[in-house]
Length: 395
Image (cartoon, rainbow, N blue to C red; front, side, top):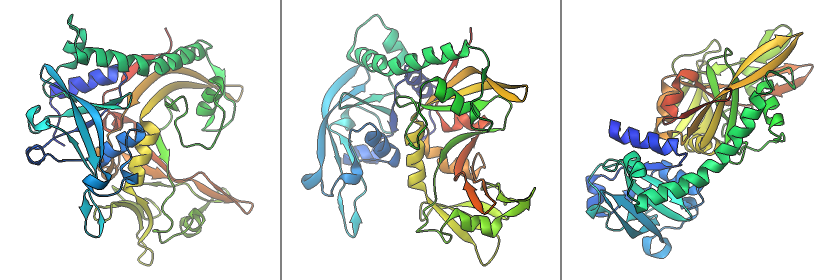
């Protein structure tokens, strides 16, 4: 996708300010001419997440298995209701590359225009944000179909955000609250308990579709994204215990491997991340010749985890202090992000902005494994997520 203009970025900032979920499509000259647009991974994930259409469950053949739904295109100062088709063409030896097409699109938009795609009440909407100023439309005294659409979808989306902010501000007004556990996880566990969220092993977002990520203001420089186990079938190693036994070390009487792995250089254990673009894999490699590549994550699985976990996230900055050996938290500021840019995922890995941690230890014969955790450098939050909203919890 091309680099966005300031005009297009301002439109995306407007969508974020209204708490609207979207994905982007860039129709090329060739695509408009042929009447075919690629349903990229980002588009497919968005449609699946919104429970609108799942290409994974679709057979091949436009005529046999194609799906046609109603859509609305907003372009220039007009709109048009048209059919939208989604299909996977037949291809010899494998399933065809997914496609999407809005009927008559070539008569409505210019090549390489950026379309913001939204879903509302089982209908797909596409807005030409290269031409239309959403802010001007929304604040105009003239009532239009686009203005009414933005108002309707924004109202529905903002109800949960408003509800959560009210609860967080009530917690913030309590001042410093005592941590429920003496551990790094205390900042999140304490907040979830105050919000009435029960502990569970679900990978779904925490609060009615919103992920909560609390962090201490002065602790560390990375933000947790998600945890994801490697594909053991594709990997040379078959468990993290095997990793511990191979690369672990003794420290303070405990056999452990507290490890951060990045793509920009090998760590003390000689480990490094590498992307295999031909296979769409992220691999972990050892400098030991007899080991080499030993862990494999499928990048499509990681992208899906990112979208699922962080389609909407509250990053909550917290002040921490110790009183009589106990930790206390003051929840202060929320950074509200939506729609992570999965197109930047590999780039952020290659530049070291995204790293992988797996803290493992064996003590008294028992292995404690906290999983493989993908983390993002705090200063790179804006590279992963579109422009966000910031809320102060304290007056």
